[in-house]
View (cartoon, rainbow, N blue to C red):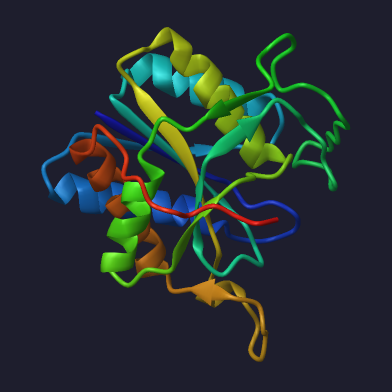
Length: 213
């Protein structure tokens, strides 16, 4: 079973492309014959992690892919590392604004994804979907959920999981905006490609996809 998640809108926006992409990707994967569930998470510290953990406990998936919006990024960002730090530049949807607080008190400083991000990068390139391996998921609710996921998966050794950031979706932007975006079908296709790659890949590719700064 595959679990996909996206977020509700935040920061005054009316849509969040991560949730639309997760729902559409779930339909694509179901069309492949997979058992898939899509869950919308609140953009709230604490509540988002609990909702995700409840979904993992309920569905017991073999693969979890969480998605969030990274407005301003031009590519699908395959996140490599989740850090144990909440440091919110803006309040979440419940008005919380933690500063320099751990996601999990006493937890490790960081977790690496257990998804094959290099293989996914190559697969996305083959589909002409712009993508990158990202070394930081930020310190807002996306990273909070990514860290909470990897921490929770310690109890499920047969389940792999990770996080993907998506750019703005084209329809979000006003006419004349210079902000990068991608069309909605491409965002959904990207999530489906990542899942399909993970399902058939046990050892990640060894290729350069790091950062110099």
